[in-house]
Length: 91
Image (cartoon, rainbow, N blue to C red; front, top):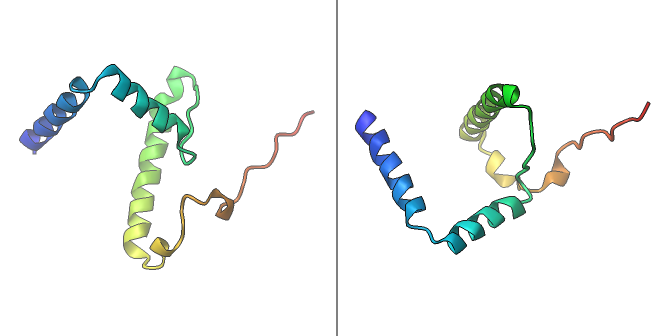
């Protein structure tokens, strides 16, 4: 298993080291333009908690996707299908 992980790390490094600055910038811009993703600034001490929540989300999503045959019928990128957060209330 360790050898496979080492190989994956080498492949990722080779990919990014082989990119031009323009290619890297275009990849970054594309990531920020993806409407299914959000970039936010959070306090450093919350990073481990946020990472754990993302991992739980990913595991749950993969588990549900594997078990529920109808799930692929939904367009998961259509955010209007999901409940939206309430507007913040000013007091």
